[in-house]
Amino acid sequence: MSPTVEHTILVLDAPVTVQAKHAGPGLYIYEVPDSVDVGAACRWRVGHYSGLAIARFETAEAARAGAEAIAFWTDWTADADTVRQTGLSQPAEKRRAILWAVENAGGHFDDCRICG
Image (cartoon, rainbow, N blue to C red; front, side):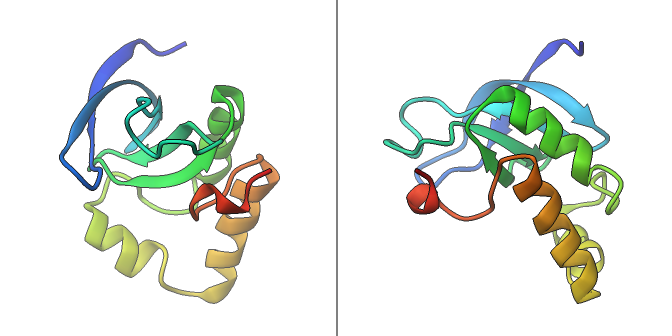
C-alpha cells in the first residue's frame, strides 16, 4: 500500500490540503474534508495531480477500483489542459469507456444529487 502524502485539491473557496495516496502515475485517491461538498454522499475522490477531481465515490475501496479502471486510458501525468484536449476529448468511444469504467467501480463524475 502506498504511503499517505499531502495533496492540494482545488475547491471553490480556496485550495485545501488533504492526505492522499498515489493511485497510479498522475492520480491520487483522497477523502474530501467535511467542509467540502457538505452533504454529499460520495466523500472519496480520484483526482489529478493538478488538484482537480476526476471522479467521486462513496468508499475508498471504490475509489481505488475506479483509479485502477481508468489508469491506462490516458497519460494522467500530463497537465490538466493536455489531458482534457488529447486524453479525454476524442474519440467519443474513449469518453464512454472511461465513464463506464468509473460507473462500474461505483463512481460518477457529476455532483452527488444523482446518488442515493
